Amino acid sequence: MDNDPIPDINHVARYCSFRTLDENGNPTLLAFELKDADTYLSVNWLEFFEAGSCGAQIEEVRQAFERKGHSLQKKARFAVLNVRDVCAYVHENTSDKRKLEILHKPEPLDPSHSGVFGLQHDSDMIVEALLANMVLETHPARQEMDQ
Amino acid sequence: MSGVRSPYSAYEDGQPIVGSVLVPSIIGKTDPYFYLVKENVIADTMLPKTVLAHQLGTITVLYYNVSTELFGHQEQSSQAAFSKFVQGSESSDIATATGSVLRIYEIGMSVASSDHSVQVLNLPKQPSQSAFGALEELRAFARAKEIDNLIYKVGDVLHAPFTPRLVSRLELLAAEPDEPDEQPMAPDSLRNFIDFLSKFLREVPELTYPDIVLSFSGNIGAQWRKSQTEQFFAEFLSNGDVRCLVFTPNPKHPNKIIRASVTTSVDLLLDTVRHFGVLRWCRHG
Image 1 (cartoon, one colour):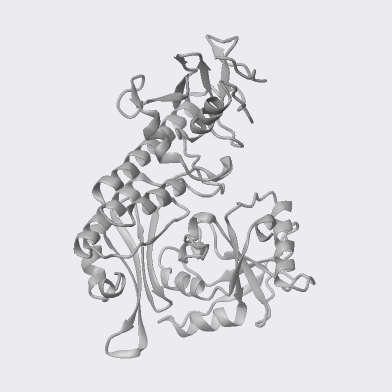
Image 2: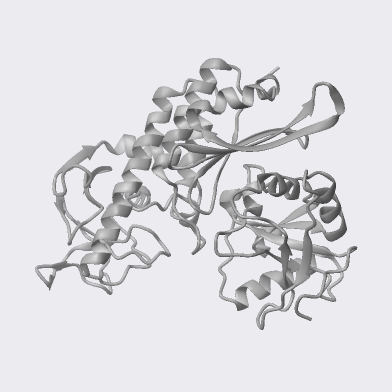
């Protein structure tokens, strides 16, 4: 349902452009930068899919991107974050005790689409860096890179 | 020169030219310009970013310097052009900046290895002739040339063990963005970064290699990250300001972390981060 909170124990994946990754493929804080036109950071809710493994869930996300006509870059990656850990870490380590919310924002072609709410434009490098610190694992944006 | 005929003819005075070879600048990209190659003759259509001539086993790359003289040209040796763009194994991996000579390099290799047999793929459609489109293309070309020149300058002004690696990384990031909402690398941002890094290296000669990334708006981001609690990140804006982030251990309370995010001018950045002890841990040893 639109705007439902993602369960704490679940995970979300953030599509990270190649340009925002370091040379080892790790997301930097720029991978979590809020674009001017956006009010939240787009992510995908992984447990929305019944597929068992994280890799299988990421594959579902890839297919949603393709349905939306989003051409996945060969060197881009999906960064996986745990909902509870991210929210707690940001809350504990920001001077304003920032409360992030991760809400389901389904789209017709992308039913697991979700958003991280609570980031601000221009002045939120600390939160962006904290998000980058909390990346659990990354997966290639294109499946063939897995092989 | 024998060449592969294009489904899209080259045009000169509105008439297709027989016997020519069309060379697209970027495989897989829609590019409103194309290049016309004839045996030992350099010709161009409209306002080209790059024209090239094939000679036996070598390539001469000529490009128009639109920033100073619209229809003048400069010659660049094939060796210099090659040395800048030899990276990646597939066309989609390699720099695709407007005005890039990379595609020419690939064509050149085909010429050199197969006796002038040139394979042309994904030819662009006939270019738009709108004045606005042409102006935008010229701006994009001027920006790409400026970026090229700045990256070339890196090798001259930055004397560090990591300079060749840095140049390669910048060339990779200077490619045209793959995402529709991403801007290409901003020349003024790159210039500010080079100025800062030059100053940083003078103060810390044993500086470690920074991770270089690009923001959505094309700004250079440089990151020195030793651990989750020792990070220095700077995003160089085009107006001379820098958005900077520092995570560093609190020297008086080792179990606490100082986290600071400030915007300052590039000429004050080093002084700003010096107070946070960044210079202690972003060096080798």
